[in-house]
Image 1 (cartoon, rainbow, N blue to C red):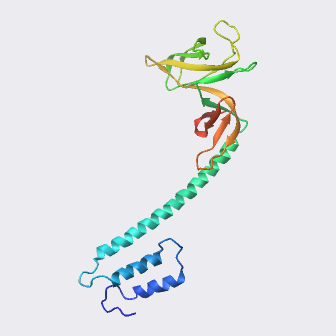
Image 2: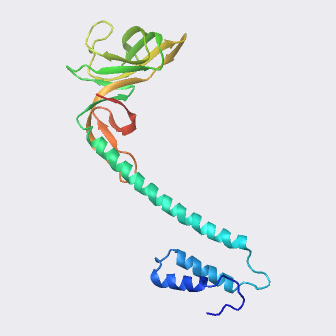
Image 3: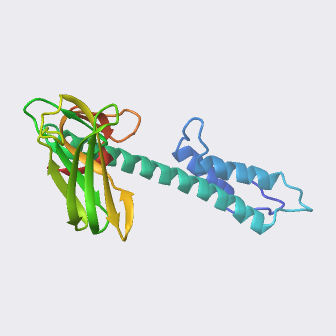
Length: 226
């Protein structure tokens, strides 16, 4: 084809036509061949007295390359997300039947069962206490642990109140506090429970664990697997 104005490099147009014949573009997508065809059309129809600056030409090519790169990056992220989700699902499935520590401020007392509780100290404390309250807010059991180092402090409740009498089965609230650097502050409490089943999400969210007496919690909320 003749190129009397010499507005684009020789051989560029024939290269575009040959590549269009080799690869059919996907419907609804701007492929490289289509982009090159549009660029050639733009060059052929430009004002010969005001030709396109080389910077504009290169800028359009750079924009197309950026969009193409972002698309490929999104595909890579999608593949990575699917892989991570499958890995999480497999890991969560191995948790069924296992005992775990999960953060909670409530526990349930059952006959002949002794709830296992843990407190987490962010630093060494001079005085650590655990309070167990009934649903009305009355403290029925207070446990003093004295000075403790940083980390978990474990306690197994025998179901007795402060008077040594058996507490009624049911739900209770647990609170813990410690004196750290001379300041009294609340600290997190955990209970030990078992994983009954796993719920897998279909919207890309992490798996959820269904725990005895606690219901459904996120997989990331598990403090420790026992």
